[in-house]
Length: 422
Image (cartoon, rainbow, N blue to C red; front, side):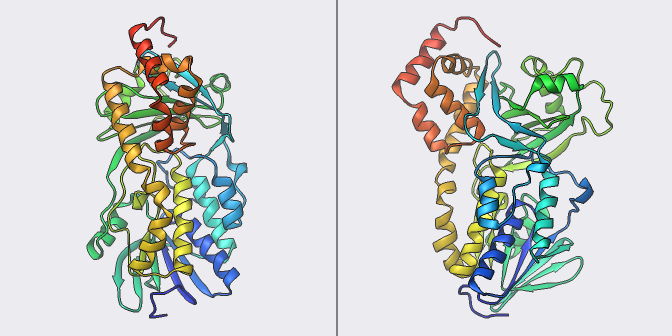
């Protein structure tokens, strides 16, 4: 165990959480340490058992570029295309009265079961010689020369702790008690799934239907193709099971769902509601002496969601680079890790502006003219696609949308609505 807070030469790292950020950090540390000729002991602490899908993950599991290249080029891991349920090549955006089809002209996203992805990545970590402890972290200690992670299995000493625990309250409370860490603000989410007839799935195709309803408290909803079933989700400040039922009865949603749907289910696992949380702001104090927090737990995400797995992997890799190249002190993390994540951090205000502006338009049913105008405007279609698919930063989306000719097209569509295509 080293006393130094400088770059980790030979020591140990404990990673709390075996999700995308945690496994990415571990694999990046293992690969870079080997290249540098350093002996680093790595342990991932994960309480869930992903094998056999014993636990459900509330994430929709739509994995977008550049994740495949991140895994192969920076982690030495093949992207799990064999787990794919569908290749998402189309987004269909719905408002109260309108809809527009937005085709993906880039590399399609991959829809899969997130629990299977997590299991795959943990197995990759094991194959690369990384220890995985199936246990829950229950307490922490920070000392001048080391940190300690207490688990319900065995205590672990480390030179640095990486927090990759997502929105887990238990892990969050440990860091809150002992560090300046305060978790990000978060939306509530409800996720369920449904197995329609095969003919319906063939007609549905490899796409995501995104909804911006005018209902108070529901900020957005979605129906995602997963091969033999669809995943349905909503998110908002205080969404609950009753709001999900209301969402499922909206006319624009009913037009997409099979008929009949959601009254009964042949599969016993269908229409069970799972609740989660989606961060939308940067956390406070997410790094310090001998600890650094990545992914959702740090609030390093898009404010209107999307690319959550990709950003978790990116921040996990950046944390690994900071630990090995710059050090494990608060100063080192501030100078490198915080700086490396400025692409995410600087886009958060733009995402918040987009989020609140979209909510305002949806509540007042003012999104319909935007959709009508977009049907005739390729630049506006491109902006909508980038916003929905997460292929571009929000600052680019906003700049693209504020062109005078696009604003004029929306105003014309508002004054002369024409016929609705929804």
